[in-house]
Length: 220
Image (cartoon, rainbow, N blue to C red; front, side, top):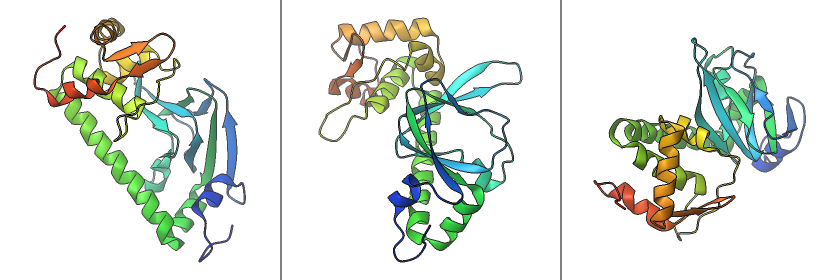
């Protein structure tokens, strides 16, 4: 790896070298498990990953998703010796693995890369704050609407990508803190109101975002 003036973020993240590798994972394959040694940072080049936590009582819950272009497993940079969650490929994924020592050195010597990583941390922190507020103050119906909008990546032009079927209603229920039956009820309600449509993929329509600005729930 060549550091300095010619440093290229994409080359660093996509090309194997000393202290880094690019690994492919099939759907449902575990990238790392809760309790594994934490000695590297990961960057998702392509795919989608589910983050799962197992409680001391043996209860499992999905706590988040990792999308293409995001870092994960970076707790080792703040002293975590073991992984605090399990990450599972939700579809075929391509992942860059960067050793802790190489990541620390690159952050120290490459200001642009450090700025990129800091931006990632700030965006993730903002998302966590929004999730907490959502959990505290919004109904499960609004929490589901917000999650669907995030998963569809609704952009400023109002265009949204279909949500693939690998995200099950069980996963949606875990992520918003409710039951699968409630998710099923709300999904059917959203479909009847023309806010979503689904057969195999879930299509989210822009009007679903209106309920997040409204203090009342959308009524059928």
